[in-house]
Image (cartoon, rainbow, N blue to C red; front, side, top):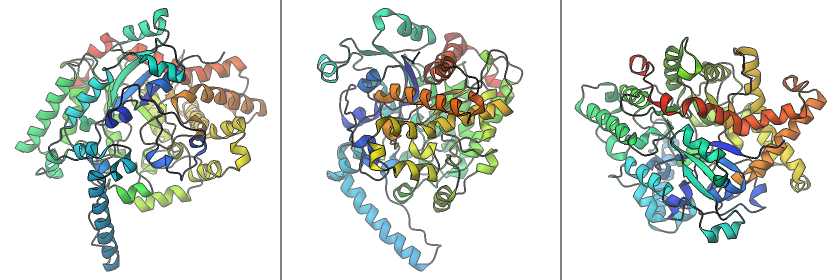
Length: 553
């Protein structure tokens, strides 16, 4: 039987309407042309369509969505870079010219219509994001209040897009409330929303006004008054966050830019390196300030536990976190573990974290991606086999993203983006081809667990895999599955492709599986694994259990 409801553990449903000043129910679905956009059209840069708006989620039968709140990092709207003066005279001159051009673009973006063209956000909003005095926690609270502002779909919107008139959302704070949404016949058209956050800068670090006057080297010296003041500010911010009616279920420690807490992984590619500078703090380790933040988030002594999302952490940060989690989880049953959550990623197909480690050279890493013959993206922002096992051992989950570049290597994307026109117009074939990168990631995770992980009774090799689309997170989504409304089509394509592989005998993991078995595997990935995870870790008893967090972390 096909899946009739879906779960997505990472979607930015509020980002477009909140930053554009629209309704929570703002929807602008993709056109047919945008569904066959490839890599180079304007739609990939400042796409004028929404991907995870609540209308599309409803049309796509998404029953559980983790809405990731995100105070926009000022670095994402600062397209100036300091000249590199140590690479020769002509290089320096070129960088000075580029820097000047970027300054001009920056000024025009802040004060003219160019800002809306480049970012899709009004210039007034860009100026707010770039203010020196801006506090990320203020934006976070406003976005949370915005999410709560309109729980029921307006009648005119429901009529326009052909969804049931009683469509709505309900923000849930625990598994009991979630079950009410899932089982109450009166809530058939209600979507359960879990609050999450991308980036611990949301607590008030990595801001222009906190970076100023506090050298990075001082972040490990808690006797420094400025460092201690920053730590105390963040600790208080966590305490405030835990007083919300619906505190975040988890928070990502890092995002694109240095947040004074922990090193981040390289996430920008190609043109992103020209516009944005990720180098400060990239590939570095934890700071003493961050160790305090992690402990306060995971502690139950100051309110309900908030789990951590390891996506965007640098290798060194992840090594520290995985080691602490393993120390805490040793000899514990699953229900007493700290699970490692990766909300939206792919795999890199490399055996170890050290072997997959990126350099600090953006250009070299672009070339590494372009020259690799792997079917996967080999960057260390993706998961090595070693990490897949660590996540499995923690009873964690891996949310697979629906971004073209993150899921696939250069040769995969070259092939799929250069398909002949007649193939693009053959919808069934087009979907069967484009589902392969997602399925390759699914199968790789399952193979690693099958060969390297322990498999206790009652568990299957598919149990850690879920969907974390990153819709509306400035991704370039897989063409035929570029909106939440396409998830039923994604499910059907996965089932069909897996049946083909079984019938041809090309995938040992599927040998002997019945049609019902394959449908069940896809059902688990698209919904069941999320529900089971929440049944363990989204309960008041778990979130309030001291465990051994305060002594280990």
